[in-house]
Length: 301
Image (cartoon, rainbow, N blue to C red; front, side, top):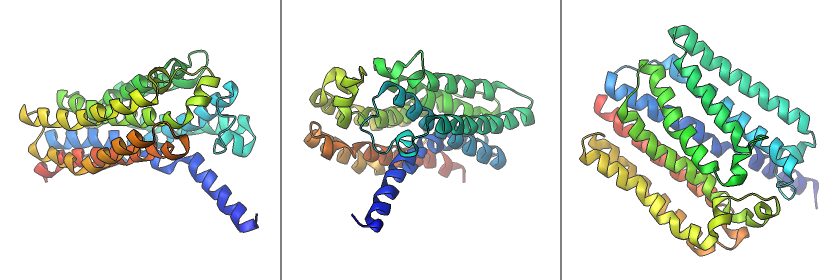
């Protein structure tokens, strides 16, 4: 192997380890929560939005790094070449780097709370962080009991969007909670799809993910219903005059849902071919969330 090919391989491994596309899970809830706030108040506090967005990205970086650290302790990542811990060979460094990102992220949210003389937002975010820790962190490791998708739904759906909305309005909204259900589903879908290609590793480490519990075939048959719920709920909320008609723009993301369902349906039991399905899910999450939020913003512009 040549030096260039080694560098290319290492470059791809680092890209897979850092997972830039995955940071949409930080961006979309803040974007949607802020969009709903703008739809209801016709005001947007740009500085608070930017601060919250950067803080959310830092906190998700902590989640990703700490998960690699905790997974290295159970041996589930033994065959994962793109684990940050495996790439650096320094678990302690990654642990403290993750904690640094967490501290900076919390500091940003504290700045918002201090500016508004209201600590509700920091309380919600700390709850999110605690639940995020229980996913892989000892002694909880709830992800190993198949509860990761539920935690993901709560943290990146109702809690994150409620916090983003509150940071703009200092109140809560039933409309933002309705929107958070859709974002929570698409975020959990990413985690759900990430297990299709690693059933053997999950079983070896005693991780009872939903894919392990249901099997890859039944799990793939569940996908059309999960994806379909995104569009069914949006239509229902529009029909009930909870969402503006413009939120039906979310249907532009439907081809990504179809692609995900077909891809997993065909390759669900072939790890080498299904391993990219989580990135299709990321694309669906990003575009559906972006378009949903635009549907709230456009009527007020």
